[in-house]
Length: 145
Image (cartoon, rainbow, N blue to C red; front, side, top):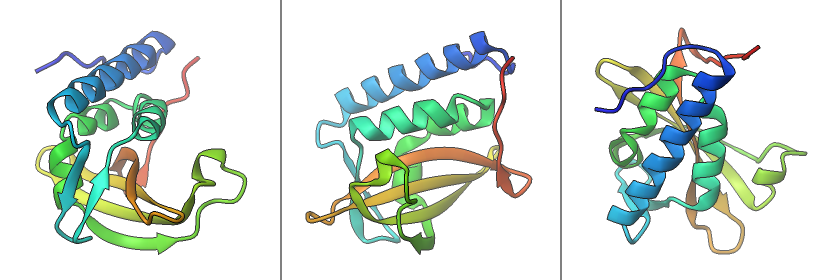
């Protein structure tokens, strides 16, 4: 297993961001279809550049969120739907979505993991948007010095 830094310094966050982007690169190489069938959605969830970009930005802020990303296939396959909403207004990365689906997955030893999926306008394709760990009932973030 890889050594994920646990601290809250800029260096730790930067190292975690690299771990996430490297993980996605390896995942994409071993999953040429870049999609996993989700049991609850009864549809494929696709992994795109946006998936890696958004997840690296958010999940790198906390150790548990970075660790959660390493269970990507399991999360994409087994997460269950919690809510469906409209995309956030003013968030550029969500403009292409007609709907945002919040899903959760409980991972033994890690707790609840939040998976956000966007439904693309037109094609209706489900795209993984972000993965973060939920701690104490909410998604936590580090604010590096």
